[in-house]
Image 1 (cartoon, one colour):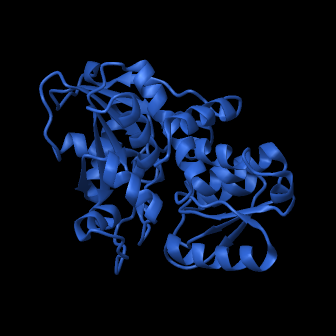
Image 2 (cartoon, one colour; image 1 turned 120 degrees about the vertical axis):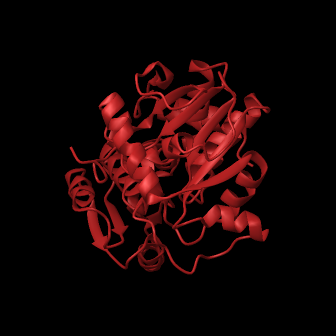
Length: 313
């Protein structure tokens, strides 16, 4: 388990490099299809456009000068790679990012603007990571895992600290799941400070990696990925994420790509925020009543990533 003191240390470490993102009361909006008192934690406004900057900065600022001198690399569905590229830019460390060929071109362009070298490999994240790990081992480069790393998880957990400070009445938080680093960090923070608060995870129906693993009682590898939400689409999680999620997450629900698209359009219409499919996954779960809520329940939805890939602007 990642401990609260590690998450608090991460917040101090990254304070000068990331934003404390705002929280918006969604239940004050005109088109309100829910009874709970819903709040939006806007990590879509985070530097680089997603929560990933928190974990990436915490990891890289924790490395030794010798590790940094060898350069850094990572594999990503897009957002983690951009965050690592940003961290590499801040620390002036050569950075290489391995991506599946399905990553949108605008994310590749953003990576290059941050100064990273880009390598495209395979159809899904797991293909890109296989090559990245092989090259890192051969060349001695420091590999930054997107989710299977306690330091990354602690960085993402800083979101939980902010949510509880800004919304002390919190009863439920809803978090999208890719590899599981985000919800593991938030779950660890929330349960340490407010054990009775619910943590709800959301996965695509086309990539139910954690839900299937928990049902099986251990790690499984999905035979295929069918979602278009590429940042929520690893075929397999890792033991550290599985173990933390098993202890801190109360329920995992599934949403379809169409439901994420509708939620992204709802966020755009109601708030003017462009969220990518993965960024709208948690909102999709609320809009479609995937889990039980009570009238007036204090509920926080994490909008975890910006993008216009699913919105007709």
